[in-house]
Length: 122
Image (cartoon, rainbow, N blue to C red; front, side, top):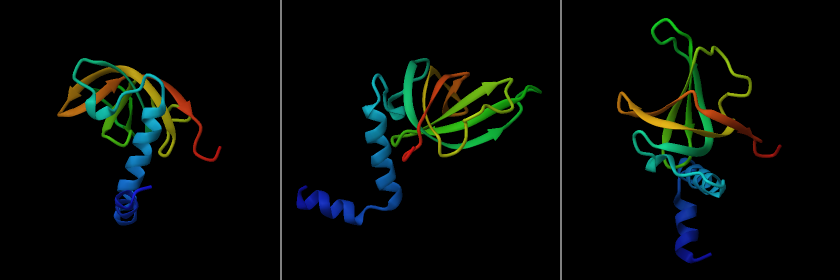
């Protein structure tokens, strides 16, 4: 480890360190791209950690919304017609696949295919 790398690590905030670790973990997943590089109307495979989960009805239909963070950016995941999905909870790691669209200026994937991954230490 170079002196520069050691100094940067010592002065980095916990959030910066977590982001670097998440980017490293996400990029290690085969076929995954960084969320920050996902374009509108692009089919993607992403890997990251679920930061939040909210039940928010859309036009009278239940919709489960989650925020997935991969260390580069966050992307919204929306499952229409679902009130709850077992295992989709904050802190859980997941690999998702779907079509990105821009909704209100935020990257969103509706009804993504997902695979839950083990939590660190499991």
